[in-house]
Image 1 (cartoon, rainbow over the protein chains, first blue to last red):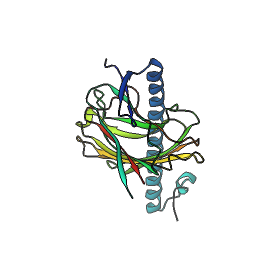
Image 2 (cartoon, helix red, strand yellow; image 1 turned 45 degrees about the horizontal axis):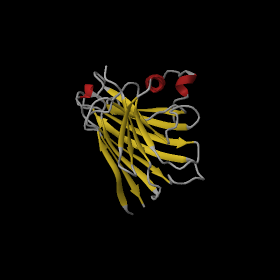
Image 3 (cartoon, rainbow over the protein chains, first blue to last red; image 1 turned 120 degrees about the vertical axis):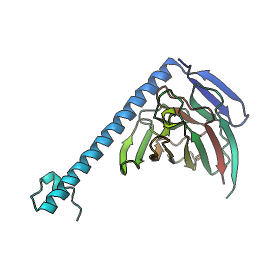
Image 4 (tube, chains in turn cyan, orange; image 1 turned 135 degrees about the vertical axis):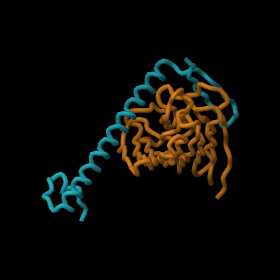
Length: 77
Length: 173
């Protein structure tokens, strides 16, 4: 497995230093990454669910059928 | 307006997960970072990366991010809401044919010691395999008034910035 590196560039001196990430930094990165992926998945699922409700509402309107309260709430007048 | 290159760095070897510009001169009004990166983690279709100021912890009460992703493959705009968790942008991975993404981060009033620090971060990439695009717009708020003297970019998880990834830091007046 490739060792993960942190590079620091000192903008005043131009000096570049490298060090391996600590185990704590790696663990924190993994934790944050898991939270980001979970939020992305939740947001994508919510977006798809909303699209499905809108499609259902549109189909019912075209067919002259009554909407559910959830479907009526996505109609923009 | 004048724009001066403060530092530019290019990745030349594998393994780079975090990238810090430190001792940033406090002589400009605004910082502009031009970012051209990809992730080289084996098999990754994409990976996130994000920015933190002054070596802050990447989670907790220090930051709030509001992020939107736009996927053109299904014309879907996904708002990820705000979060105190470090959050940033999607960058392409080697699973996307090693195409690079292009991003800009602007931090106005970075030397102020009286206002909270904010930045707007935008950019995206095209997938080589599906010709789809992912665009990102992120607003960053740091909840303290400390002047920004260093900026760190981190690849999510065990991600690695690919060789030839470049970040350039400019000062604007």
